Image (cartoon, chains in turn blue, red):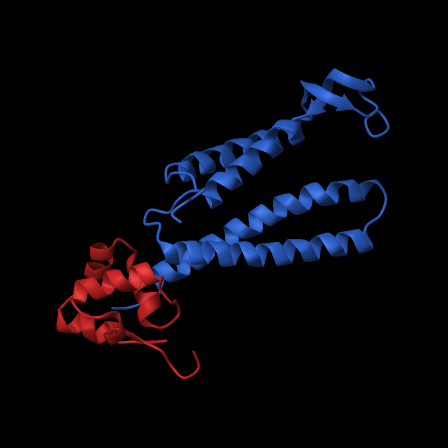
Length: 153
Length: 66
């Protein structure tokens, strides 16, 4: 009954640190057009003409390949670590924010599928998952902030 | 669900913060419960009843719409 999949409270600060670092990395990578080498499980040259086709390759890629996974980990840590006082009301707000974010992201996914075609559509699933996490964190933190501010004795 | 939390608190001269600390929740949760925005779990309701030394029914009561 008391099973809880949340991270300890201090993970929130780890999350914020990773978020800031990966955002700067992403920004610097985009501005300076940095290319890095990463090991890959599979490369499909149809979408990627910088590299060789096949399994287990070393590929040339952008900073995005490092920054995006880091950003997702950061958002998970921020949204899914315990609050300072983690009680059932906080968990209720968290679950409500998750439900809300699921609806909005599903809507975006549906709209993207209906309205966007071609290569650009390949970005939609990745983007929707990122937006899902981001909206959840924003909604959850705003709701918490409101409850922390509001309410008199 | 209605509640008499505020009255019970006043009778014992407890602030929301005091009550929150006694049962291990945040002050905001007490506030949300008092204002009827949040219905606490049975465990939390029993803890509050224990603090006030009253049966749960004297603090929380059903409404006709429940």
